[in-house]
Image (tube, rainbow, N blue to C red; front, side, top):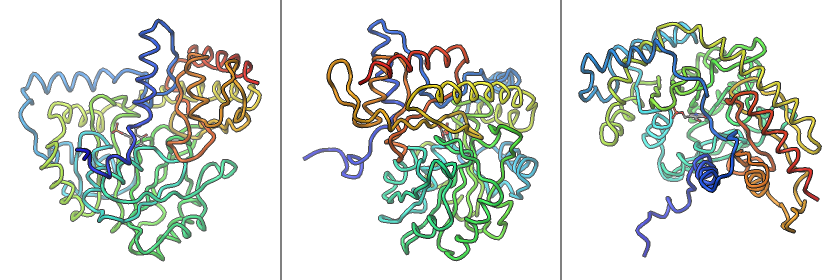
Amino acid sequence: MSIIAEHVTKIKASEVSLVSAKALELERQGKSIIRLSAGEPDFPTPDHIKMACIKALCDNMTKYPPVIGIPELREAICLKLKRDNALDYTPSQTIVSSGCKQVLYNAMTASLNPGDEVMMAAPYWMSYAGIVQLSRGIPVFIPTRQEDGFKPSASALEKAITSRTKWLFLNSPGNPSGAVYNAEDLKALADVLRRHPQVWILSDDIYEFLVYDGIKFLSLLNVAPDLKDRFLVVNGLSKAYCMPGWRLGYAAGPEDLIKAMFKIQSQSTSGATHFCQWAAVTALTGDHSFIPIHNAEYTDRRDLVVSMVNQINGLSCRPPQGAFYCYIACGTYMGKKTSGGAIISTDEELVSYLLTEAGVAAIPGTPFGMSPYFRVSFATAGSKIKKAFECIQKALGRLQ
Ligand code: PLP
């Protein structure tokens, strides 16, 4: 009999880590690979944040931190939520964890009974499904259409709700679609949610500052404050603050849920790294002038990706309004033959072909729940993006 728990056998490791491992293997064999696969900024963590960490280390902030987060950071989170999102929370309604991923895991483990359902619009960030399954829940996918900007309609949301539905995950700007929900989108979803008081809302706002074309991020709570009693704000420092390796995330929500999440954290990872939490105080309360500078660069790269994609026969993508991904439709290439005679029948096979034949690492659409597509990240220098799409164009041109 296998030692592995049954529900764990049903879960795949994150596709990003699988693609990175394959890319590394090819690099070891001497191949040069352009990675458009990773979901992390290529900009370094700003100096003032690093200096705050160094100071905390020198001040010996190296002991166990409070499990729920240092009080200074929990206060900074409340300040941030008020300043940037017009949301009122008190420190006792917040928790700090080792990354947004851990926040999500704690929230699901704290709230799901076996068989409870969690809705998410497809395409969705692949770890949502894995985290729900690890917590013995069932992910339920709400279909969207490319022509609607990958945003779900109110009727699609209504159809997905059952008596077992516990949560709706909202992710705007979204990974992998880059979709940003406007007030009208959010009001339509809120109208449905009001009719189903058993459904809680988890809003993953990690890409909130990565918005382009003058668009501003809006929380569902900004248009539907009456839903606050069943709303969990989730956020982290990995993306806009360029701190993915620091592993810092946080949540704000009803105290009962925060206390249950604390319980899980206290019996698993304990508090997030102590000196990193002090750096996070500086990140949230200090200088933010680097964000628009990065966004101007991301906008240029996005435009480059979109224009290069749309010049390639059989590929298409819409300009995403947020995050740093393009989700590229590649259906035309299904059924095509490689020079070795293999038939490409899934986006996973196409991505594998692009890795070996174009030397470009991307992520297939299948694990994001919408195929045939693939995701590229534009958190990479423009010169690399240009070279990558030239190689992609040539490799696709060799398919018959
Ligand atoms: N939420 C979304 C939508 C993401 O895309 C990611 C990372 O790719 C995360 C959460 C994870 O954030 P963290 O690095 O804080 O664990």
